[in-house]
Amino acid sequence: MRRGSWCVAPADRGSWMNALAQRLPAAGLDAGRIQLRAAPVDLAAFAAHVRGDPGFPVMRDAVIQNIVQLFRGDYLLSRLMLEEGRYVTIQMLLTLAATQQAEERSTWLTLGRLQQSLAGSELASRNRIEALVAVLERYGFVERRKAEEDLRLTLLLPTARLWGSDALFVEAMVQPLARLADTPPTGAAARELLSRLSLNSATQTSGAPTCDPQAPAWSTRDVAAAGAGHRNWHRLFAPRLTDYLALRGTHASIQQLATRDGGYMALLLLLDEARARGSARISLPYETLSNHTGISRTHARLLTEQAEACGFLRLHAKGGREVEVTEQFRDAADAWFASLAAFHLSLD
Image: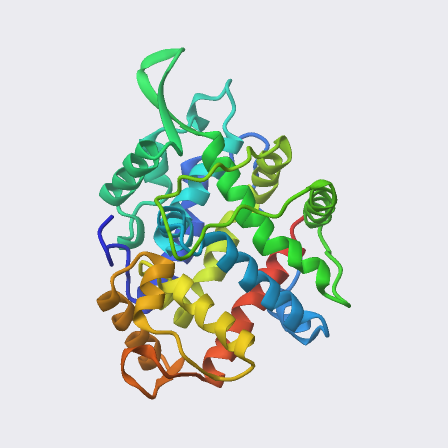
């Protein structure tokens, strides 16, 4: 995978997300039972309420720890699921797969339909979508199969490995929402998801699979298959997918780093280290970032310098040996996690 190939300017990203929201009906997401609808709540006001919840700091820290535990040392999965361009493409692929209907040919998931759904941006150009699908196929996340009804068409089929990996990621982000003290879910889909995750957690005998960050590998671990509930989650999520992508695009400072390989993981590692140390001044050397994310030490340095240029960090020593996490970074991160929490809690 080519480093930096999915990065776009922050000024372009929000406008592309909004344009995407307008284009998706033409791509077929409003076919049949799926109808785009407006958000049922004022998300900005709801996010502010979430951020003021007494349980918000615990919830935020749990999300960060979950994602770090899930992806640290797994170079392939972290690059596929955490880099923003690939994440957006995979979410669209799974949504199209979950909502396709056998009797409606226009809803079938093909490479062309996936490209059409995400057309018009450097974040997910046709060539990059095709390259990503090839990577997903190579590592067993997607299969190609001829349509029985028309052998001229090749369908894309997400495998159990991709569904399972996405289910783990959703669980890592959503399960901590139950720790909010005064903010119950307002949407039926959110209540169903939290109830299912709570039940799954109670019946599990072991935690989520983790990797040894000192001996990383290209995602060789086994991932449990996702149940039917996760596909149903994507069907319920489909009408709000465009709102979700647009919401993510409004957090330009976070997105500026999340569009780069290892960028989002680096941000989470910095926040998690500051939490563990109980101090804004931490040590996270470039070599450590490299080991945890799979990027080169040079790329780790460039990410850190970009974070400093964004006002997220102050570098006090060479090599990342003394880094200060700024209040601006904490504020941006809190706004980001509050917005995502509010969105998931409001899903109807």
